[in-house]
Amino acid sequence: MTSGLALTFALGAAFGYGVGSVLQAVGARRGASTLRALGHPLYLAGLACDTLAWLASLAALQKLPVYAVQSVTAGSLAVTVVIARIVLGARLRRRDTGAILLTVAALTVISLAAGPEPPVTASTALRVGLAGAAVLTAIAGVAALRVARPIVAATLAGLSWGITALCARALAPPPDPLGHPGAAAWDLLLEPVTWGLVISGVAGTILYAHALRHGQVGPVTAVLWAVEIVVPSVAGVLLLGDGVRAGWLPWAVLATLTTVAAAIVLAGAPGTADTAAADDNTPG
Image (cartoon, rainbow, N blue to C red; front, side, top):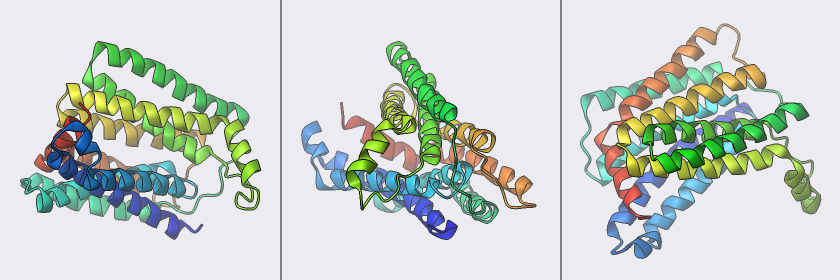
């Protein structure tokens, strides 16, 4: 896979997450009950978009550094706000428009700064450590669910999804999976980061839903994205050797921080609130 194709996957993931959120919100609003909402074609289509977006992000992480993929997928907030304005009639504030434009500019810089990365050769200790971090974060998440503190849950959700990205980056794809699917599946089952990826992904999903149910969507989503972008981005550079094109480091750092700031603004946008509120009301 070329770096250009990997970037396309990352952009596709951002678009898929944004579209999926709005589709689930519309489907939830059209369902007469919880069960009917979950089975509404638009809600199911939104879940399908989320699944495809997640798979696309995993593919992108095989070639691009973690900071690039995490920043690009954070652009899904901009997609959600724009589509919510069109489909749900949500109000678009001036600062939301500015944040969207800043997101586009920041992602352009990040795409230029992120050069093609060689395959990661993670040591056994690092792979086991990532799996252990996923387990410890999930255990901390169980405690957060009991005390019902939304910001803590949002922080742990962002950390869990950040660990998911690190596990995906550290995961070495099995050789010839199509030719020997059984051996490839067995190799994946024996790989610590596979379990770390699954555990952290499930934990992050549950914790974010809990945070949305007990807290305000703006602060919860802002904390989630800030942690999910910054923590794994730094860890990717320090632990996995993620790099930046020569001369682009200051611009990459500035663009990543700009993405975080824009995500915080967009997390409080009316379109984000409308979408998350409808989406969160469905399971209960």
